[in-house]
Length: 483
Image 1 (cartoon, rainbow, N blue to C red):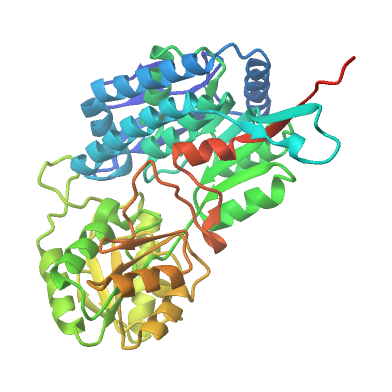
Image 2 (image 1 turned 45 degrees about the horizontal axis):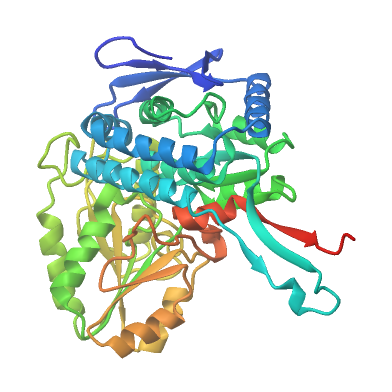
């Protein structure tokens, strides 16, 4: 299924119904730090993608897995991920460029995501409907169940590729669906190994079909095939909007972008706030959709806060992500690095000031802190998706809430304060899918409901909540008056 060409390079192809399918076009996948080729991936054509969808549909129709079977398979997959943790983390670090310590955290999270999905497979229940409490229905009883939708199409991103794939695959299998899955081309090794883990855990062929191809072509193939019942996508708002517009009446779950506001109020623990913003602003080189981006700081503490922010940022070790001491590695590719550099240059030309960082070395953009920004700059009004924090001053609480909400995004936000009334008031007023109090906006626990509003997406992740998105309510009515 997967062939290692040498000690550094894998040849990876798609897998449909347990069989390998090699496409005609091959692309190289690079180590994000040193640009070495680490994999070769082949792209499928439309006919083979349609075949995969047919296989998934036929497998769904013939589904023989009980809820306990699903639980057992997903629980075993969780155990196997644990056993193979270090191997997976090493591959993840090379593919994504995240530090080896960050990669281990992602694998740990994936272990939990699969375990949570396994438990939810046993909790897939409906409830009784009190139909006899309405007129002329005293001879009837009713209840509803949650039924699987069918073939789920999952499209997963490069930045947290292993765990976010588990967030789609685990709930889909737990709910009784089958899948076609397109991972990011940048991260094929861990995708392939996740499929192997599912197979080793006992998942029969046809339940998860792994497909590689260009995003544009595959999106077109998927949306034009009416045998897909639902799309679940994590990625850019532009692609998410395209997918929604082209999916017709089918169900869509979208986890898209953000430009997370983090408010540091006058009574905040400054040290805690600065450490949190540095930790979450530069994790994975800022390439997370809830990365700390806009930091609004009260004028009474802004100078002290900026000094702390620079102090903690200056202690970060930047470089080879496989080194144990490294705190931040490269971005995903030079094209994205160029984009972020251009945004920084554009902001500086408009009056912004770099107070730390800004330099580039190879594929690494050093952690960067920028002040004197305004809402018209891309660094503030759009999603940076790079290692850049912007600092903005405020005085009035109502004003900063308005500024934080002045965005087309609304995924997660944060408030730092030691006053519970302020914390709860701001949390209530912030327009985002989630609010974190006294930690950065990037915090996420895998069992919590996670998802945004506005251009940040539709629907919720977290196994319990994703299963609701991947099932439908089916009422069952029994007429007892049959004499």
